[in-house]
Image 1 (cartoon, rainbow, N blue to C red):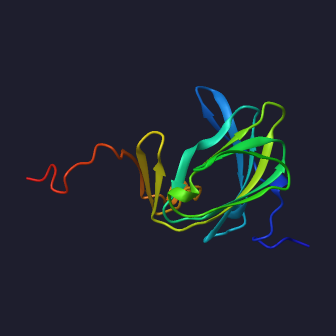
Image 2 (tube, rainbow, N blue to C red):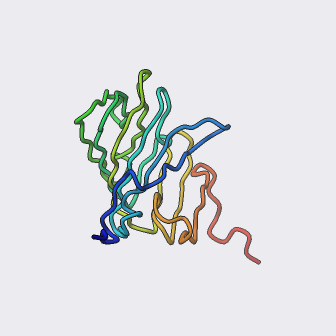
Image 3 (cartoon, rainbow, N blue to C red):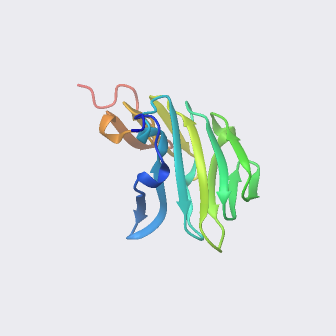
Length: 166
């Protein structure tokens, strides 16, 4: 019997490596996208020891939830750093109070499931670097081939509304 298109097994999905300077920072399987999800994103992440999942950021439109499957690590939130371990669940609200970054511990990979709403357009804030990310056509983590805007700006160097107009 064949399986319906919206029923997938994670073993049938290839990992996507996210690298910097030739070094793998983390791997991701976009489960929600593979199963045809549109308004709900679900990804399996694997983070090597000492590496981090993205940079410290928050979302202005999308909530996220993190469930730790295996390994140890730290999550940085606005109130400080907290250890995470298997069985931990974290809800991340919209706005600066939901800012976060996850770092794997020094021993073994950290494996997580992250679930998010897939609202677009989306704006992400990056407090440590004074940057803002703007995404339209596809929410962050969504199908990049549908993305009509994927732009990062410095939030500490705004320009006037009329800047550059004749």
